[in-house]
Amino acid sequence: MGRTVKLTVNGQEVSREVEPRLLLVHFIREDLNLTGTHIGCDTTSCGACTINMDGKAVKSCTIFAVQADGRSIETIEGMAQNGLHPLQEGFWEKHGLQCGYCTPGMIMCANAFLKENPQPTEEEIRWAISGNLCRCTGYVKIVEAIQYAANKIQAQAAQPSETKEVVA
Image 1 (cartoon, one colour):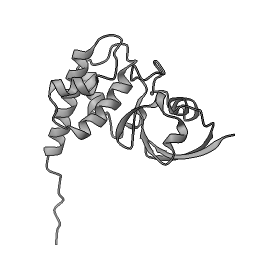
Image 2: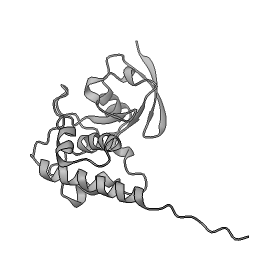
Image 3: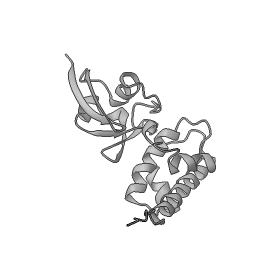
Image 4: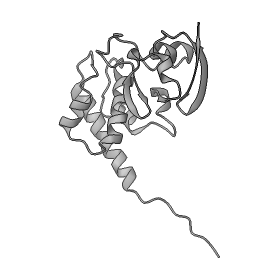
């Protein structure tokens, strides 16, 4: 017997009936057709399925869809709102992807991390992504991409907002 779940995915309300044993990763990929979230191991070992749930990096292969009821989820598809997100740009500019299989999970993990630590050291970045595996061993470029994004986000935050002059 199914159960209805209601959640917000990439800013949009979603309501579906699901089987209680359906993993969140399968719900995202098969029911919502958001295939940027990858399946790598089903044992939390690789991090390819990482999404952000209520702002925290979560491996979606270890959570049932019913556990996400009432939650807010962001997938890689929700990252680019007005052009590439600085993390996506960083992976492009710094060549932080090779085969690309780990990339969505790495970006989602880094996204949650940078919200908590906007000015990380290299060591902090390496620790933050330690639960995500890159099969191509591209960690040097991945760390550079995350540092690039952190710097860009900080620069954007430091820019004064444009004010419009009011004419009387």
